[in-house]
Image (cartoon, rainbow, N blue to C red; front, side, top):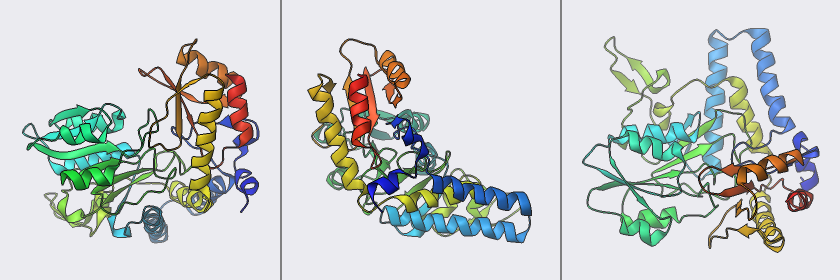
Length: 353
């Protein structure tokens, strides 16, 4: 599939320079068609009966397999969730952290990760997003590293596998800004969260959680999907593998939509997205923007406006048909550059600035 053919799947790109996949990716025609087909099935056949349940369970199984393929994991290690925040909460609760424990994270984490860390009752140690500083923050009380693979603020890539190997500690990796944007390999990571609606460009409220060794994580937030069978007192036999951690029902449309979105991703997507992000940084810098350029960087491009407030920049660009976002409390404006981003999108961004 050529770039033009693949990009043509996204109607919003016909009129908008859409640079906000770090919040929600654009929806493709084939994704919506897959969702619509499932809604039509529900409309005609209802949402009950053995055939309906078996169909849903089959869709769940196929999506676990597809997400596992995306990150080089085993399907038995994948649980379906509604968001990366779901995944963070499942892991933190299952580890049973308490006041005697420490968790090391960074100053640039999303609340979807640090919120669950704080709620655990453990001491949260916040280090600068520098590998040496992260390692230096570890003490004998540290039970977990909890880090984004790609920082949502600057697009910096953290060497999560190397940090796990150096410290010997379990690691919870927030993959919200990495999975679907850059190549991600879950092997060697204890926990990896996946967002379905961001860089994968799937429907809202979808995601996944990779658990390297499901038997070593407690099911602290059980749902009906956790158990093979249960007793009147609530005791239960969990499903084998990570599916025991699945927190909720997902509609047939959502399940089919994520799979369709994943099937659209071209083999050349990662390489093109990175090169386009680099071109975006260069164009912005040449135009006089104060661009943040980490040594190891992904497809998020952030800059500090020189003469306007970030909120004003975002509003003004939106009026020009260019969609970016402001990052509260940072002074940064952020553009999300995907494989679908064109040179014209970048030129519209710079011209609007």
